[in-house]
Amino acid sequence: MSSPPPVQTPVSSNTLVIPSPVLTPIPTEVPYPNALGLDEYSCFGCDNRQGGATVYRYEIRPSYNWSSPSWNSPREQADASLPLELQNGYTMEKPAEGNVFLFIFIRIENVGTMGVNVPLAKQFVVYSDGKMYNYTSVHRPDVVIDRVSGTQYGYQTGQEGRGTVGYIQPGESNRAEGYLIYEIPSSFSPNTTYVIAHLDNVSRAEWKLG
Image (cartoon, rainbow, N blue to C red):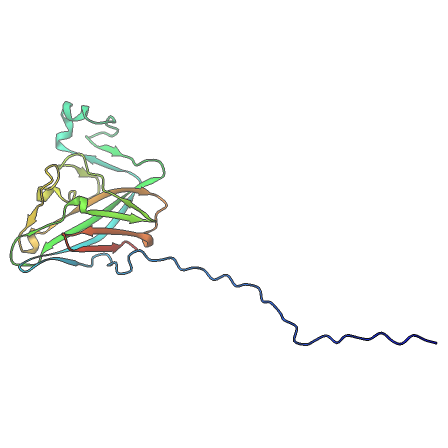
Protein backbone atom coordinates (compact mmCIF):
# COMPACT_ATOMS: atom_id res chain seq x y z
CA MET A 1 0.00 0.00 0.00
CA SER A 2 1.54 3.28 -1.11
CA SER A 3 1.91 6.28 1.24
CA PRO A 4 -0.25 9.37 0.61
CA PRO A 5 1.48 12.28 -1.08
CA PRO A 6 2.86 14.98 1.30
CA VAL A 7 0.65 17.96 2.01
CA GLN A 8 1.97 21.13 0.34
CA THR A 9 1.75 24.35 2.39
CA PRO A 10 0.79 27.25 0.11
CA VAL A 11 3.08 30.27 0.08
CA SER A 12 1.24 33.52 0.55
CA SER A 13 1.69 36.09 -2.19
CA ASN A 14 1.49 38.85 0.47
CA THR A 15 4.92 38.21 1.98
CA LEU A 16 6.15 41.29 3.89
CA VAL A 17 9.16 42.91 2.23
CA ILE A 18 11.23 45.24 4.45
CA PRO A 19 12.82 47.99 2.31
CA SER A 20 16.41 49.08 2.84
CA PRO A 21 16.69 52.30 4.84
CA VAL A 22 17.28 55.48 2.86
CA LEU A 23 19.83 57.79 4.46
CA THR A 24 18.59 61.37 4.28
CA PRO A 25 21.25 64.03 4.93
CA ILE A 26 20.53 66.19 7.94
CA PRO A 27 20.54 69.85 6.87
CA THR A 28 23.21 71.97 8.53
CA GLU A 29 21.78 74.89 10.47
CA VAL A 30 22.69 78.27 9.00
CA PRO A 31 24.07 80.34 11.90
CA TYR A 32 23.04 83.73 10.46
CA PRO A 33 20.16 83.22 8.00
CA ASN A 34 19.56 86.97 7.61
CA ALA A 35 23.18 87.86 6.85
CA LEU A 36 23.76 90.59 4.30
CA GLY A 37 25.84 90.17 1.18
CA LEU A 38 29.05 92.07 0.50
CA ASP A 39 28.56 95.78 -0.19
CA GLU A 40 25.09 95.79 1.40
CA TYR A 41 24.50 98.40 4.10
CA SER A 42 23.12 98.06 7.60
CA CYS A 43 21.82 101.19 9.36
CA PHE A 44 22.35 102.11 13.00
CA GLY A 45 21.69 105.09 15.27
CA CYS A 46 18.53 107.13 15.72
CA ASP A 47 16.92 110.48 14.96
CA ASN A 48 19.42 112.81 13.26
CA ARG A 49 22.42 110.67 14.21
CA GLN A 50 22.36 107.75 11.82
CA GLY A 51 25.06 105.78 10.10
CA GLY A 52 25.38 103.05 7.52
CA ALA A 53 27.95 100.25 7.69
CA THR A 54 29.08 97.70 5.14
CA VAL A 55 31.73 95.07 4.50
CA TYR A 56 32.35 95.58 0.81
CA ARG A 57 35.09 93.07 -0.03
CA TYR A 58 37.73 90.72 1.33
CA GLU A 59 41.14 89.34 0.37
CA ILE A 60 43.08 86.22 1.35
CA ARG A 61 46.86 86.35 1.69
CA PRO A 62 49.34 83.68 2.80
CA SER A 63 51.58 86.54 4.03
CA TYR A 64 52.02 90.28 3.48
CA ASN A 65 54.78 92.88 3.39
CA TRP A 66 54.53 96.18 5.21
CA SER A 67 56.58 99.29 5.91
CA SER A 68 56.30 102.31 8.17
CA PRO A 69 58.14 105.67 8.22
CA SER A 70 58.72 105.24 11.96
CA TRP A 71 60.02 101.70 11.56
CA ASN A 72 63.55 102.77 10.55
CA SER A 73 64.53 104.15 13.95
CA PRO A 74 66.73 101.86 16.09
CA ARG A 75 64.24 101.93 18.96
CA GLU A 76 61.35 100.90 16.73
CA GLN A 77 63.38 98.07 15.20
CA ALA A 78 64.42 96.85 18.65
CA ASP A 79 60.73 96.42 19.54
CA ALA A 80 60.26 93.92 16.72
CA SER A 81 60.20 90.21 17.49
CA LEU A 82 61.77 89.38 14.12
CA PRO A 83 64.48 91.17 12.15
CA LEU A 84 63.70 92.84 8.86
CA GLU A 85 63.50 90.20 6.15
CA LEU A 86 63.23 92.38 3.05
CA GLN A 87 65.07 95.37 1.69
CA ASN A 88 63.72 98.94 1.48
CA GLY A 89 62.20 98.88 4.95
CA TYR A 90 59.65 96.15 4.23
CA THR A 91 58.87 93.48 6.79
CA MET A 92 57.14 90.22 5.97
CA GLU A 93 54.28 89.21 8.26
CA LYS A 94 53.62 85.46 8.35
CA PRO A 95 50.72 83.58 9.95
CA ALA A 96 51.03 80.43 12.02
CA GLU A 97 51.41 77.13 10.20
CA GLY A 98 48.17 76.19 8.44
CA ASN A 99 46.70 79.70 8.67
CA VAL A 100 46.19 82.61 6.27
CA PHE A 101 45.43 86.30 6.65
CA LEU A 102 41.87 87.42 5.92
CA PHE A 103 41.59 91.12 5.03
CA ILE A 104 38.10 92.57 5.60
CA PHE A 105 37.33 95.98 4.07
CA ILE A 106 34.85 98.13 6.03
CA ARG A 107 33.08 101.38 5.20
CA ILE A 108 31.02 103.54 7.60
CA GLU A 109 29.02 106.54 6.37
CA ASN A 110 26.99 109.19 8.16
CA VAL A 111 23.51 109.24 6.60
CA GLY A 112 21.99 111.62 9.15
CA THR A 113 22.33 115.36 9.68
CA MET A 114 24.51 115.37 12.82
CA GLY A 115 27.76 113.68 13.82
CA VAL A 116 27.45 109.97 14.54
CA ASN A 117 29.64 107.65 16.60
CA VAL A 118 31.22 104.84 14.61
CA PRO A 119 31.83 101.31 15.92
CA LEU A 120 35.27 100.41 17.22
CA ALA A 121 37.48 98.07 15.25
CA LYS A 122 37.18 95.46 18.01
CA GLN A 123 33.40 95.41 17.51
CA PHE A 124 33.94 93.55 14.21
CA VAL A 125 34.62 89.82 14.60
CA VAL A 126 34.83 86.96 12.11
CA TYR A 127 32.84 83.75 12.58
CA SER A 128 34.02 80.75 10.57
CA ASP A 129 33.16 77.06 11.00
CA GLY A 130 31.91 77.51 14.54
CA LYS A 131 34.75 79.70 15.84
CA MET A 132 35.13 83.42 16.47
CA TYR A 133 38.24 85.39 15.50
CA ASN A 134 39.35 88.87 16.61
CA TYR A 135 41.34 91.17 14.37
CA THR A 136 45.11 91.59 14.66
CA SER A 137 46.22 95.21 14.66
CA VAL A 138 49.03 96.46 12.45
CA HIS A 139 52.11 97.69 14.35
CA ARG A 140 51.84 101.42 13.68
CA PRO A 141 49.17 103.86 12.42
CA ASP A 142 51.42 104.83 9.51
CA VAL A 143 51.86 101.26 8.26
CA VAL A 144 51.63 100.80 4.49
CA ILE A 145 50.93 97.28 3.26
CA ASP A 146 52.28 96.33 -0.13
CA ARG A 147 49.50 96.17 -2.76
CA VAL A 148 46.78 97.09 -0.25
CA SER A 149 45.28 100.56 -0.48
CA GLY A 150 44.18 102.52 2.57
CA THR A 151 44.91 102.06 6.26
CA GLN A 152 43.59 99.96 9.09
CA TYR A 153 40.01 100.80 10.00
CA GLY A 154 39.84 102.74 13.27
CA TYR A 155 43.05 104.73 13.19
CA GLN A 156 41.56 107.61 11.23
CA THR A 157 38.81 108.13 13.82
CA GLY A 158 41.17 108.19 16.81
CA GLN A 159 40.08 104.82 18.16
CA GLU A 160 43.27 102.77 18.24
CA GLY A 161 45.53 103.14 21.25
CA ARG A 162 43.13 105.30 23.25
CA GLY A 163 39.97 103.25 23.32
CA THR A 164 37.81 106.24 22.45
CA VAL A 165 34.85 106.13 20.11
CA GLY A 166 35.40 108.18 16.99
CA TYR A 167 32.68 110.02 15.15
CA ILE A 168 32.12 111.24 11.62
CA GLN A 169 30.16 114.12 10.17
CA PRO A 170 27.52 113.86 7.41
CA GLY A 171 28.75 113.56 3.86
CA GLU A 172 30.37 110.84 1.79
CA SER A 173 33.77 112.54 1.96
CA ASN A 174 33.78 112.12 5.77
CA ARG A 175 33.21 108.38 5.77
CA ALA A 176 35.48 106.05 7.77
CA GLU A 177 36.99 103.30 5.67
CA GLY A 178 39.76 100.75 5.99
CA TYR A 179 40.75 97.13 6.45
CA LEU A 180 40.96 94.76 9.40
CA ILE A 181 43.21 91.68 9.39
CA TYR A 182 42.23 88.30 10.83
CA GLU A 183 44.33 85.15 11.05
CA ILE A 184 42.18 82.11 10.30
CA PRO A 185 42.71 78.50 9.14
CA SER A 186 43.56 78.18 5.44
CA SER A 187 40.83 75.52 5.12
CA PHE A 188 38.07 78.08 5.68
CA SER A 189 35.22 78.49 3.20
CA PRO A 190 33.71 81.90 2.32
CA ASN A 191 30.27 80.20 2.29
CA THR A 192 30.54 79.47 6.03
CA THR A 193 32.37 82.63 7.06
CA TYR A 194 30.67 85.76 8.39
CA VAL A 195 31.63 89.19 9.68
CA ILE A 196 29.62 90.16 12.77
CA ALA A 197 29.47 93.78 13.92
CA HIS A 198 27.90 95.31 17.03
CA LEU A 199 27.33 98.70 15.47
CA ASP A 200 26.00 100.32 18.64
CA ASN A 201 24.30 99.23 21.86
CA VAL A 202 21.15 98.07 20.04
CA SER A 203 22.17 97.30 16.43
CA ARG A 204 23.99 94.25 15.14
CA ALA A 205 24.70 93.21 11.57
CA GLU A 206 26.17 90.18 9.85
CA TRP A 207 27.70 89.83 6.39
CA LYS A 208 28.39 86.56 4.60
CA LEU A 209 31.59 86.43 2.57
CA GLY A 210 30.47 83.88 -0.02
